[in-house]
Length: 299
Image 1 (cartoon, helix red, strand yellow):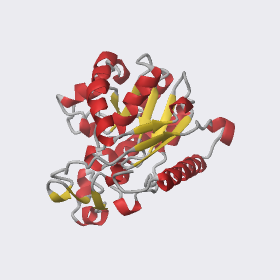
Image 2 (cartoon, one colour):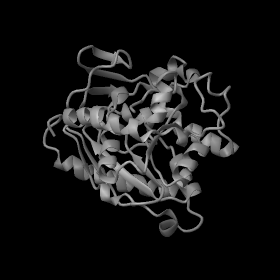
Image 3 (cartoon, one colour):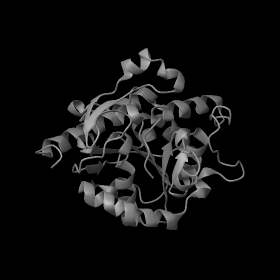
Image 4 (cartoon, one colour):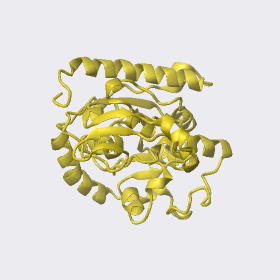
């Protein structure tokens, strides 16, 4: 259920497929496992498998990070909803495994949580397991089908750009200018539910995203926009690999009130205005969580 590598282009792909009107082709996918056309991504969710993951791995993650998820009742009790969150913790981010089990504990398993992911994570045999747990490939078609089916869809617009932000600027909402999530919500006719978390950037010392290094090395051709530098246990200094083990930092997540785009911005909303509003609401909430926090890692 967890992933982070290559997420930086999730919403770039979402926007591209939106402009084209079709999902990416197999050629664009670089040969990774694809969903057969006769069985959409949303049909692969397995509630029993998801429950087993939530009750074992999810429970272990909750204890390890002493996690709290506040405000779950803000999520509409029925109908599609796009949960938009900041992303933390680098490659071994706990975000999904903190939120999803808490959601299922509150609402049950009749309504799935789908998480949009870059196609690069769906390599066999991992791909089929991720799909069973509700991770779906980011595309206009998949996101729309999931939302129109009445599911909750979880997105991290900042991707790995966000999850590798420097620890010393951890309490900042920065989606790197990506606004595809707004278009997705508008097209599906669903509310945006902002969500913020704090503590994930204290699981190790994230020093720099390394975007300038990535540019100099020409890594953009391999769709790598960053080459993050971090320091942690047990490997010390790391450039993505080997990934250090996360410290047991206390993670607090807060779900905010839903934003009805049409009600607040009219029938023809300005995408950038909606994005600015979402980020402002999230930043204010994250600032409140930061003021509550007394010590790094300990919370």
